Image (cartoon, rainbow, N blue to C red; front, side, top):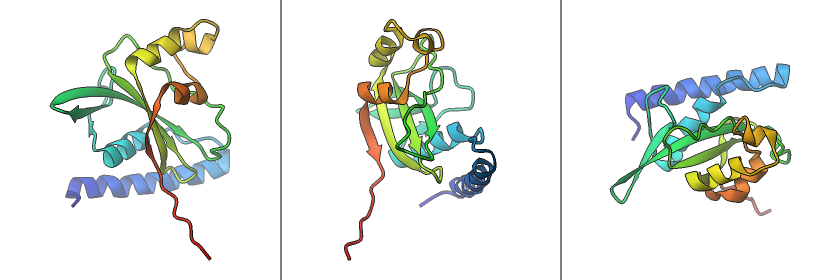
Length: 162
């Protein structure tokens, strides 16, 4: 059962998604709320505890077997999931985190899939020679991130048999 606070947040984010969809239809650009929606979706679907705003290095904590894991969450709005040429936002490897979680949002700003990569694999991928966006901006392409990560959660699609 959701608390009153959680119900209010859910209602606000539903309204925000509607505004973001209207904005995207008019401009073909995502409204700057993807990160907040991604964090909320991850926390809700995976049971993560979100940190205070502006927490340096990570956005959520997950407790597994009594140990705390710090997770940096990156969100990406994917109105057309077949186009996967986008990049994640910058990953600050100088700050503490145990893993990076990529939350892909569908055309309605709902979670479509979540991929998680451990810190070591993220750093290795960012430090690999050859890409200015990787080496200077600490950004990974979605396809590259998927190749070093594990699918953590995926939306199930119900098929109707006629």
